[in-house]
Length: 84
Image (cartoon, rainbow, N blue to C red; front, side, top):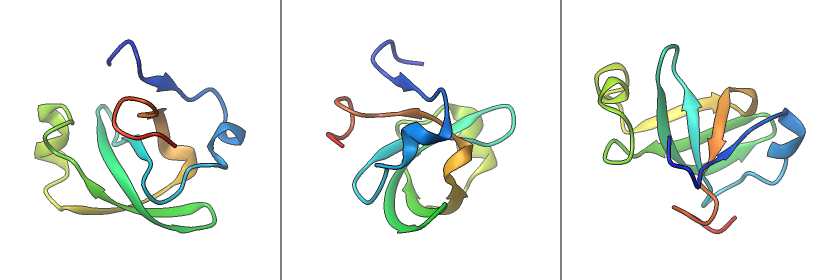
C-alpha cells in the first residue's frame, strides 16, 4: 500500500465516494483499484484498473467492470489517483 493512500476506518467516511473516485476494494486476500463510475446508494459500480492493482487482483478479477458495496472499500485514492 502506498503511504499516501487513505485507509478507511469506518463506512461513514465513504458517503462522499462517487463517480470519479478511485478506491481499493477488498477481494478476499487481495484488493483491486477501481474507478467509481456509478453510485446506487450503498452499491457502486466501477472500472477495474489492473495497472494500479497488485498481481493477485489481476488473477482474481479479470473483468474490467466491478459491482461492490461501500463497506468493501479498504482505501481511498484521494490526491493520488483522483481529487474527490
